[in-house]
Length: 89
Image (cartoon, rainbow, N blue to C red; front, side):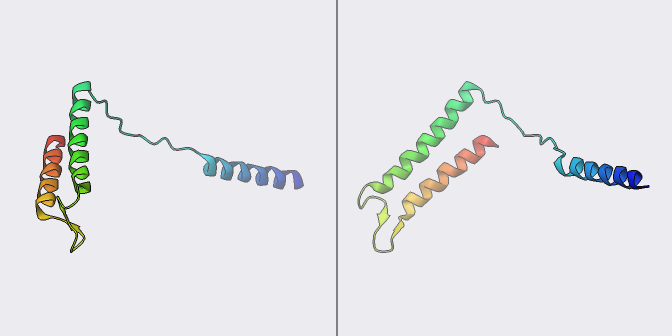
């Protein structure tokens, strides 16, 4: 009887450890990017980086009174974002 209890106990522990340690494969979507598409993405990124760098020019696109970018800079930023979204859709 003790042996039967021991066997049942060990089987339950093994089952619990199996359930706990069971790995579920996660399917990840992997995009293969063509070289010309990668170049387009780099161009979009470079365009945004250049636009962001324009904020560093003193008095150009920064409203120091309100401590925010000017509306011209914001409009251009929205246009860059819209263009990127439209290209990726």
